[in-house]
Length: 322
Length: 237
Image (cartoon, rainbow over all chains, first blue to last red; front, side, top):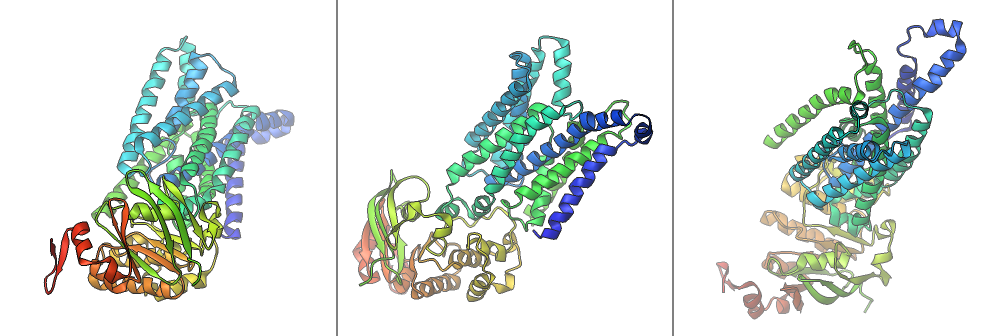
């Protein structure tokens, strides 16, 4: 990775962030003339948290996706496919709507606990050396379980209002979040990403196989626990505030590894940057869909990500055939 | 008589490897033979401190367990039995991983050249043949010129000529001063290449010595259930 590449990356992030702040631009110029203070309020209170959350959440999904893929030595692993996102969603729904612990910190704690339990379950089910099939099956099972349990929790919601609120949040949304919420997400996400990035080298060595990495002095069992905890904290927190957003964690690392010549560990930071850009772009796109109301961001990433995933499966099938 | 390059005490893994002490001399190629399930992989893993089990290893008098990853580079390398590399790294990049983050492109080029692997160094691992991949993986283990080189069946899946070539490379590594321990199934190759042969059975080292004495007729019959017939090869005992 050259410094020129990093300059390009910073510019790209600034561009999408600016686009997200300024679009749709209708009326902004008029507002600047008539009521500059209102414009400032809109920017700081409405659009800035949205941009920050999109960047943070996207970065967390991309970075943790790369880390999980490196850990499982599997390009199909990601927080959503392995059930981490689903677990976090379930944890948040249970804390918020069943226990009634509605403060942002309480929900966040539920999200982290749910994500952690889902990841531990996956490690237990898939085992230490997991081939693609076992991993996917275990992830699908956990996602299905978490999804069913979330539906049950919604069905048991104390009021229809609580049901709709939870449903809306589950689809993933960056709208109507405050700067405080962005800060609550930001701190654990940045810590978690910095930690994951610090494990880049060890995860690269894991590409040589578990035994070779261990002989080189990397403690694989410890590494596995560290990745699970860091991912659960970051993804759990982000899901608790913004709902479930799929496919970024799968797609961003695939692009990132093209930049790192397939090295899985050192792809973590580039994947985080790409994830941030992708989610921010998706959030800009959402505003221009003529649907009467804004689409949930999770729906958009799934609509764009699922075909990409299918293309990936198709390409793998062709490669297997030789 | 110089001190051994590696000394290991109390190596053990429940159900696999009975408590074993072992030392390896610098400059010697030690080949490890034994039937499937005899504990060869467990012994190699225990020496390197991989996975579960007991024992401690000293390399040039320094405990391996407290050596940092960067300090281990150039001191010990393990080539595991699995040839699977999950990521489509190029051969050259994979070899460079053996330097543990240190950047030394000359060392990478040298080892690739010595193993005649320059021709396909830019190809991805998943596009190499079995023989090419084996050479690249060996290059990764050799690139930092480790003092102790442990290899789990490096000659597996190779044709006879490439098995011989592989053992020649291991002998060269030993001649450069490394202590080399490799498990192998071909007893004839073990006999002709090894400075020292370890025979394992049921988690014990049952013979240890020069090839002619360690691979004695009676032991082969009791451990492997085979005997050597001139002009036929191995037959069931």
